[in-house]
Each structure stands twice: as C-alpha cells, then as structure tokens.
Image (cartoon, rainbow, N blue to C red; front, top):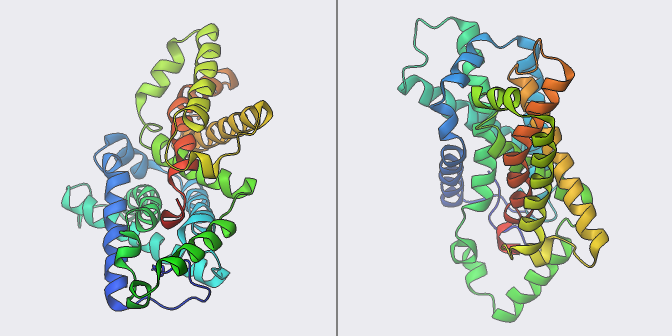
Length: 306
C-alpha cells in the first residue's frame, strides 16, 4: 500500500508496521463506505443477473477512478505512475477479497452458487468496496504522529517548510478536483442507485418538480462548496468572484449527473426506458450524488495537506 510519508522528496517503501496500518485503514474504509451495499438486496440481484459486458465496463470504470484518486489525493505528491498503478491494483484486489468474504459470511454466496452468479455478486460489491478501501487508506490515517522516526526528529520549521511545499504541489487544476468530485459522488450515489425508490420517485414527479429539484441540487452544492466553511474549502475551492462560484457549482453538478447516469446504466435502470424517464431518474439521483461530489472536493484531499 502507499507510503505514509507523502511529503518526502523521494519515495521509500513502507515498513511492515506501516503496511499493516495501511491495510487496516483500507479494510476499515472499505467497510465504512460500502457496508450498506453489502446488506442491500438489490445489489445481490444485480450481481446475479449482470451481463459480462456490463461487469467489464464497471471494472474498467472503477479502476480508472482508483487511478485518478491515487494520482491526485491518495499518494505523496511526487508519486510515479508505477506507484499509482501498484496501489490501485492492491486496493482493487483487497476490495474484491473483502466483498467475497463478507458475502460468504452473510450467506449470499456459498459452494453451491453458480460461477456466473458468484462472479457477478463479488465484482459488483467489490467495485464499491475497492473505492472505499482507497479513500479509507488515505483519509483515516493518524497524520504526522504516526510517521517514521525521522519525521519525529524534524524541527517545527522543517515540518512547516515541507507542508508549504506539499501545498504547492497539491492538485488545484480542474481534472484533479473533478476526479475527487467523482469519487465523492460515486461513494454516496452507489448506495442508492440500484434501489427501487429512485425509479418510483422519477415515475411520480412532474416536470416542474424535476426543474425545482435541479435548482435545489445546484443550490445545495453551492452551499457546501462556498458557504458552509467545510474543512479545506478555503484552500481547495476557488471563490474569488461570482464567475468562480458559478463555474465550480455547475462543473460539480455536471460531474454528479454524469456519475448518476453511469451508475443507473450499470445497474440496468435504463433498460427499456425512454429518454425522458432516464433523465428523470438521473436528476433524482443527482441530488445525493451532488452532495457527495461537493463534499468530496473538500474532504477527499490528501490528509496532511488539509
């Protein structure tokens, strides 16, 4: 897993103790962010009936998201592509192992389960668990207090210089911020996307209500990003004027809508539906996705850089 000394100029492999702590944080994060999914019947059903092509697309999408998160927030600032790739593979594998173990303990799979059904359930559950593993490993750490002995011997001035250097290297560019927004949107919306409630709400609301929901979603996203004084808001979100506020709010909302549509398609909620009904489902799911995306831009940053 990743080195805890992310602000160091050169990367050193973690010690055994660090690796055990990191794996422990990964397991905790995977369970924290995905446990509701493991207890959701709709997920079991989707896993039992998922098409191979849809599973492959889901695997590719989740792995790209892991790569993006590890590149922009999960590793030290000068991480090499090979380090990002190794961390992503480990987190993906740990997510699948965790999902398989818990599904077996819950009685959802056993020795009599057909292989396609077993693979489908483990993969669908494992995708969300893997993202939780990645976020948990990066975000649940104890900070500098758990660092190497060399870190403990550093003077306050040296640590302050390194913190300033790390802040300068932090990803402020658009792609990095939108990657974190996508992670936040997926973590929240994936708990809701496969449920029947989204389809029921989309079927019952009127166009006026959908328009109002869109406006409310944009407003809530703007409040989270620019008016709630969340941790990291002043450092990670530009708000020098109305243009920055408008651009940031709309960009985050579009990420949320894209993540919502992708999740709904992955779980088969668009199958046999017309464009208007698909759009309605996407807007309904867009509200929790936007909250997750807005919070993700602030809270999923590198921990010691916050």
